[in-house]
Length: 472
Image 1 (cartoon, helix red, strand yellow):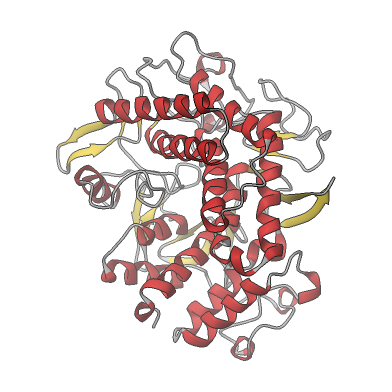
Image 2: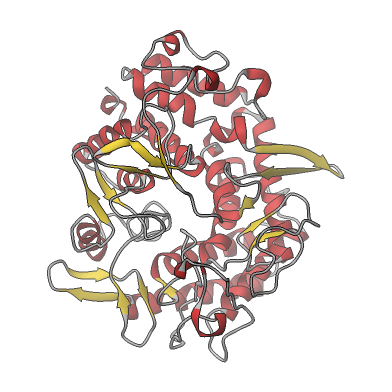
């Protein structure tokens, strides 16, 4: 994925960017219309529009209501292309700033709408179309992270030193990329009990995921994946002939890149391995629900147990200040990297992904480390504090990290703090960005960051459902 250049914005959005009609208060100068006009939106869901109206009518904080109005439908308005191919739902989703579909991003966007599937058949078909499209991509190349809509397109990354196929946008092996489609499919089934999308092709994709995970345990050799790129950015390529630095095969799964798309230092990326444990168990359950191959289900459960036991044995280390904490990356030889990145999965977001309890004592110690100077990517300014990423420059917080903090908190005061910081970070634009300066939110990277917008809408709706008294 291309690196975002630093962008500075000041003041409100220009009138040229404002089209369409929202609610009466949106015409006020502090709440300009941001959404596209109705006729320009790519997909409209009555259930989603009803939720926006309900939130707007009942939430006292009008700025948060405005932000929800902009962020919640963002993916439907701007990113989706729905059709039916041979009678089957098919949904392509570009990522906003690049016309390519990421397995991770498309799953995050659809996750936000899952609670509304029972109320909207069209929305249910849209999500099913994403599941179908993801299956096609996984079967094309399980090591790729993003794909073009045109299966024959050869793109800008064609010269990467790896096995690039037509239709592949970027071939960065990110363990979480194969976890997210399982997460989406599993929650879709939970919400609808519909198994019609879990056909033979879907089952083959799950078997491919299992095969890929086992290959990247690297028990006998480095496996088939390698990646190098001619670039000025060290974190966009892998050392050691494209295989990364060596690891000791201890049962964990290698991830060449982080969810930020930066190369890992030590290939056993701990948050993604926790995510894999959850995903393997969910896939095994779905295989049993649809009465698919029982041996595959057993193999997935066995791998989940192996990875879980290896995490308990190798991923915990003693910190001189915080006690026992989870490392971010390890190599199985005793080396570890103590940090956290703003992306999900990260160590902070593990309870949100169902990988750890929010009361896990090692997690709580890790959480304290993450929000301290002992995390090299924790930044604090006059208006906000949170986690950034080596993906961009210093002293820039990713709103995603603040959202993850709020989603993994049970403390009203901490959740209120997260809401306050998120309310301040949009730089008068009405949408969230990749990162922002905590001393001056009008300086940010990216014009709009779709994944952060979807996560923020999810966070706001969760608070509205569970703690509406905080939305004041």
